[in-house]
Amino acid sequence: MPRWFCLFIAIAIALVPASVRPQSPPQRIIAVGDLHGDHDAWRAIATSSGLIDAKGKWSGGNATLVQMGDIVDRGPDSLKIIRDLMRLQREAPKRGGNVIVLLGNHEAMMMTGDLRYVHPGEYAAFAPRDSKARLDRVYEANKAAIEADYRSRVPEMSPQAIKDEWLKGWPLGKVEYQLAWRPDGELGKWALSNPAVAKVGDTLFVHGGISSAFAHLPLDEINRQAAAALQARDAASTAIINNPHGPLWYRGLVVRNEGDDATVAPIPPGTTIPLTIEQELDLALRSFGVKRIVVGHTPSPKGIIGGADGKLWRVDSAISRAYGGQPAFLEISGDKVSAHNVPRP
Image 1 (cartoon, rainbow, N blue to C red):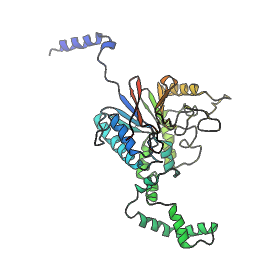
Image 2 (tube, rainbow, N blue to C red):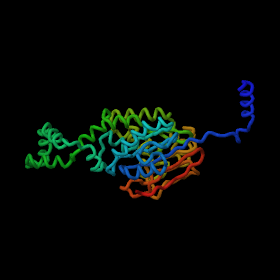
Image 3 (cartoon, one colour):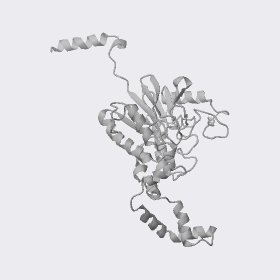
Image 4 (cartoon, rainbow, N blue to C red):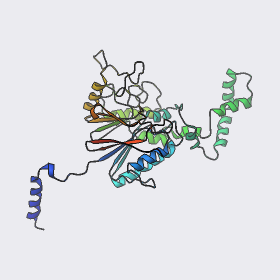
């Protein structure tokens, strides 16, 4: 084909108004809320949204999946979900897609040793065949200190009674579970590689919310601080991963409840009153240059909720069977945002 003809075609295309030119299909984004150990619900959502096939392999093409955090606690199968997401993080880029898993407050709790809501099945998933023998060895290695501790409270306790009582607090698999969530453990390393906040196109994704105390920070700095706190296993209430105004815990973009630190907005410097929800939301939108913010963390059992004229979307639809809510996912395609309910398997 003559070069002059190729040039003619290029000029002709350039003269066609942009509004009638063929446009590249918008990137499809799927956001999935808090899963809390319900693998069946997760698979149903991922299949219904077209992200995986019947074998659990990535079939989402160039789509981006954003899982909003809080995979663990309350349900038995968090490890199965994590294994799926780890594999999809490797598979999706080969097909032009992407998988982003946000840090949730419950993942941070695992890293800092707060195990209040761990389901027994989560421990059991980590129990090897020799778990009982390993636990016995741990007890024997620390027997003197353990017996001294118990007898400081109940002097008459027998050695067997002390051991029996101690074992109640250490179900099989708990030791291995805690090791996995250390910064140098398998799940700890994975958590450290995941962001607290992510921006995809004109949407900001964060597990809890962005308060005015953090809206001035660049995304990279928020994520750097979160990773540093996880690495240090920082349990201080002022650490970004525990701070009620931090991205993992803040609910003030959704609700304001007097006395609940995670819903009471911080007071900006130089002022005497906090911003309203609308003001704080608009501040975050301007700061990060986005049209909307998607959050998890605050359950809405009837399904996904969009508010503030589409500027805020709540995708924690209490998916886990532990909550009995509505499995669902949010789909963003260009400027079109839609919520989809999925039948509970």
